Each structure stands twice: as C-alpha cells, then as structure tokens.
Amino acid sequence: MVTVRFFAMLKGLAGTDERLYKIDGQVTVEDLKAMIKRDFPGLGALLDSRSLLVSINQEFAQKGALVKDGDEVGFLPPFSGG
Amino acid sequence: MVTVRFFAMLKGLAGTDERLYKIDGQVTVEDLKAMIKRDFPGLGALLDSRSLLVSINQEFAQKGALVKDGDEVGFLPPFSGG
Amino acid sequence: MTQDLVRIQVKPFSAEREIELAKKASKGIGAVVVFIGTGRDISKGVEISGLDFEHYPGMAEKKLLEIRERALVNFDIIEMGIVHRIGKIDIGEDIVLITAASAHRNDAFMACEWAITELKRVTPIWKSETTKSGDVWVSATP
Amino acid sequence: MTQDLVRIQVKPFSAEREIELAKKASKGIGAVVVFIGTGRDISKGVEISGLDFEHYPGMAEKKLLEIRERALVNFDIIEMGIVHRIGKIDIGEDIVLITAASAHRNDAFMACEWAITELKRVTPIWKSETTKSGDVWVSATP
Image 1 (tube, chains in turn yellow, cyan, orange, brown):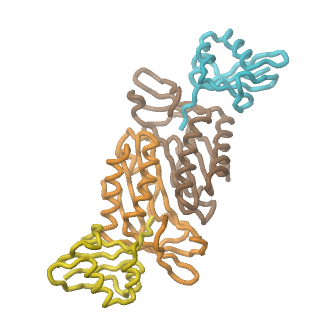
Image 2 (cartoon, one colour):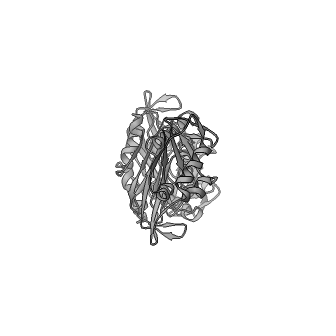
Image 3 (tube, one colour):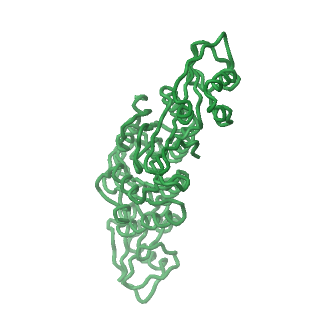
C-alpha cells in the first residue's frame, strides 16, 4: 500500500488527511495523481497546479518519480509558514 | 569660559575629564586645540589625529568651527560602542 | 542540544530563552541576530482575527534541521536556532523565531535573513487565516 | 514612549521586554528583527576578561534618538528601539540591543542592520577591554 497524505486546502477539499492506495509494482507520481483524481474529482485543479509540491517518504520528489509499495506520498500546497 | 571635555584615552592621558578655558571673543577649534596642547603636551598626537572628532555643545563640528564663551567642546576619540 | 535549538511546538516560546540557548554555544559570540515573525491583523488588505498553522510532522522538523545545518556550513556563524509554532495563534503573538549567533554581525544578519527566506520556501507548514468570511488557507507568502 | 525605547543604562536589559515594547506600536507588525551585541572573549586575537563602556552623557542619548528618527523616516518600519549599556560588562553579557519592527521582514532587516552600523559610526561611546596587560581603550570597531 501507498499512503497518500493531504495537507491544508487539499485536506479540506478531500475531507480527509490520508488515503491508502494499492499499487502493482511501481507507479509514477503522475499515475498516483490520476488514481486520486478519480476518487476526489474536486482535487483536480490543485493536483495539476504548477505550484503543488510532492514528497516521497518526506523528501521532495519530481512528478515523474517512482512510487513503490510502502511509500508515503505527500501532496503539498504552497507553503505559508514563517 | 569654554568647557573642554575629554573622553576615553584622551581622558586617561589628560588625567582629567574636563578643563575650563577663558577665551577672548571667538576662537576656532584649532586655536582651542593649541591652548590644550600647551597644558597637556601628551595629548598632541591624539588631538592632531585625523580620526579625532570634535563636538560643540554636543553636536559634531568641523575643526575650523568657531567656539564662543559658554560653549562645551568635546574631543572625541574614535567610537567603539555597539 | 540541536533538538532544543530546532523545534516545532504548539506552546508560545520565549525570545529570551532562545537567545540564551544560542549564546551557550561559545564565548566567542559577539553578535546575535533574531528574526521574529508575528501575527498581523491585516493580510493583503483583509482584516484577520486569528491564525492557525498546520505542518507535516516529521518532514517539517527535518527541513528546519537541514536549514540550520546548511546555515552553519554556508555562513560564518557559530550557532542557529529555529522555533516555529503550530496550532491557533492570536494576532500579535509570535509565530516563528530564528536566532543566528556569530563573532561579527554581518554573518549573523546574512544567515538569519537567509534562514527565514529558506524556511518559507522549503518547510511544509501552512497558515490559515480567520477572516469575517471564514477561515482561509493562505496559498503562499513572499 | 520614545524615552523608553531609546536608552543608555548601566543595568542589564531584557530582550523579551524590548521586543514587547517595540511590538506595542501596532497590530500591523509582522516582523521584528533584533540585533544584540555581546561581549566576546577574544578581540583581534587578544584574550579579553571584561569590558567597560563610557559615553558622552547627553550627546550619546541624542545620537541614538536621532538614529531611531532617521530609521523611521528612511525605512518602511513601524517602530525601533535602541538600548546600550555602559559601565562594566562581563564576557557573554549583552552590550547593545536594537529592535526594528515592520509589516514585512525585509524592511526590519535593513533598518536594524543600518542602525547598528550607524550607531557605531556616530554615537560617542567608548569601549575599554580588560586584557592580561591591563585595560586598553579600543580605538574603533568595524
């Protein structure tokens, strides 16, 4: 399973902060996004936004990066700390 | 009378922090310096130093500025606050 | 020690304590520059009555630790501390505090300013502002 | 108020209190930058065991007040405080503290850095360092 985590407005729109996805072998972050969009159509615009960042196992990852079983993938709206 | 005030190393070398000078009419800061050097020969090098600043009535003054009766003149070695 | 200097916490922090913590590192410290970010009552012209911060636990702490490490490598500083609050924060309260301690002040100024800019860029922390029309997630701050 | 914010004093100051004092000026403050100068144990390679500061009473206070006024005019800041200690100061103790409070952080950083540079340039304050070979007046600091 892959643990997908939502934060801030993504969490609000998804109505949950976490969702598990079963994947076969490896998928890319983009593949995972497509799976999420099917479950949460309202997240489409934000997930496709150029300002969205992605993390795999709490480290920044490119959108073409590979996700494997057991990974934690974070979808991170633009930060506003500080 | 003109009140001359010495600070930091000037005060140490002069052995006093203040000296009164009687002047006739107006003199320049340079004239006053000459009077001080006669009383305190050990101050010569410091008083002639390019890094010495001078104040008249607690405001910075040029060396050609005029000093009149009642003024307070400060001879200020390079600052080292902060 | 580093765990003390770099933290994310709900409760308010004390500037005094954070400064003392950074100064402990060396008697060669001659300058400490502190940045404190506080909750303003106005944001982009809109009146704000409160703030709420959320973070990505684990990743946010790691990013702050990395900022400190990189600052110690890239600037001539002796110590750096970073504390960020999460949860509800009132207007006027402190949100974040960064200390940079060095022998000479230029290095501390540069490192402190770099660290807060970098914090905003790479740390997964999000701010929600309470306005008259409800709570709004802030999408980015300069 | 201004007399509170700009002071020369013998006794130690509290960073916490000075920050609170500056923050009182407005709820629009979003950033406070603080510079603290502290007594180092080494100066130009020489071991220092203590410091002693002297000022030109009246003139030094006036110069600090002018620095604050000029900072408020020339930078987009909301408040500034400056406190400088005089008399004997131990290694590790705080000597000077400058707070700059603004809506956005760049202005506070610029104003704070300018103020400490200007303080060193125009304020009649002198430092004597206690070394193994006695007390030495410091002729200038960068």
